[in-house]
Length: 335
Image (tube, rainbow, N blue to C red; front, side, top):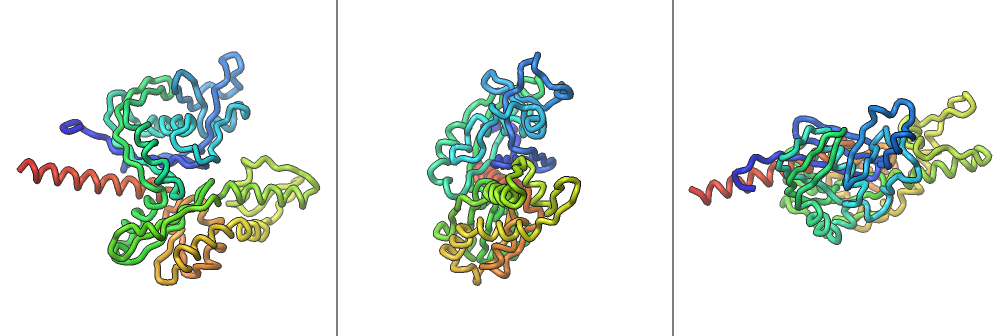
């Protein structure tokens, strides 16, 4: 793509939320994808819903997929095959559409995979994305050329934290990136190099905590089954409405989080020996829910600022630096 103007975009397409940025604008939506009903089956109020056309099929995304989509066609985000799947691609298209990508654009796309599966899956995802991508967003056709970069999601948060505190560039740093489906551990040495021996991941995240809280509520409230899509809101508010009464469930959430977090805590102890000689930060949307659990083994851990968007923003910074270095090398060679 030498000589062609490139548009740099990072997209963190998680199992719970999707975030994307072009460096100036950042957007996020729920990672919910379902097929758009036939025209004669459209629900009242769905006429202006967010729709992506991909491979000849129309999909609802985000809140509109929750409100108007068919549960039987909802894409499964809680699996190791999520990266590069149809639902993943549809959310990527939605993010690109939201950021104003136009037909004919040449996009450098930096995206990520969970730390635990990065080595096995990144080549396949790169091959999938390294081509032309065609889709429609809100009825407008778009065909773009993509040049992909794939990095571990937790490393994106690591780069973001260094950008917020330059002193960490020469320190040992560990990131606990807590997502919806998995938790990634990324670490770097004081030399600045990513320390592969201290990187890893476990299948622990907000989805497992939501399931544990749902089961506990079912047990304590006589078999009453709350819709699991409502649980994340309960986790944030730490209260629930039951028969017109507001009930504090904060202690119950903390107890379940500590139980669910055990594999994560074991991995932190195994890889980092507790991390006493490292700066440790939590990233990802699950950080507030598991903060107390992580502090039980790493008392000095902190939640980084803008933990929700840290992976997306850090991936953008990584790609921006990489492109700048390549351009400098090109200019030096030309001179």
